[in-house]
Image (cartoon, rainbow, N blue to C red):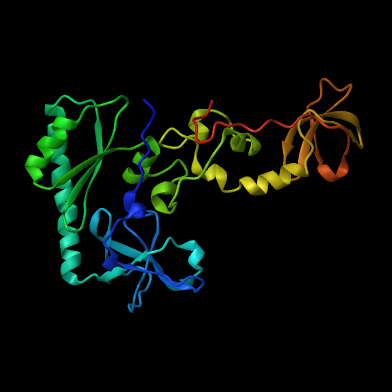
Length: 312
């Protein structure tokens, strides 16, 4: 079964009309950007007469119910083309009571996770619970899980509904979403990019690893989720520009020491290694690209279409 990608439904809000602001066509709109979990997607809301600072906690209404969020983009004017009208409005800044309730919800989520795991085992379901999330008003309780095959969890939902007496929703997520929610330390020693600051997953391909001269060993280029590391994307444009100025491997070139074949390229250093003709016993020599002349270009590797895949 193909992975069912986790899709946040906040961007499909069907809030009542009184909770929205109709934008005036052609006029800049004042917005405030809010997210609902660390490194989560940022959504635009109308601040009305409130002035918010970075990090302020606020109460808003979404399609999932009343929720508490964090201001990531303080009040600013944006082009109305960047917004889907009507724009939802902020209900109010969060009070101390709201923050206390949010802390209680976080504790309740941990308790719900323990109960849910026991019920999954009792129903004999082959699924792994990843996270539990209450909406701020506790009108809905969401359980995020992973599994390798299709699971019939209808009886589990009924069991959970009778236990928690609220609306229950189970969402199957992919392995990248699991890593984002669970968090952890990557091989670089830093927090996972996806759970630290990436609001959306980036497209990554094995070609990026090849262009950056990474070993194609999966342990070297794969993250904790088993997919290609997101950080392969960060310097991709720089490597692409450097590679355009560097002859590809297999090119026949002329050097100060004679003609030879390029066996290795170092795009950022603007260097290549050349195996000189007639010197089979000698190791390839290092030259600056400005010091060689190309006689015949080799073939550049074709683009890989295996975006977001695992290493070969």
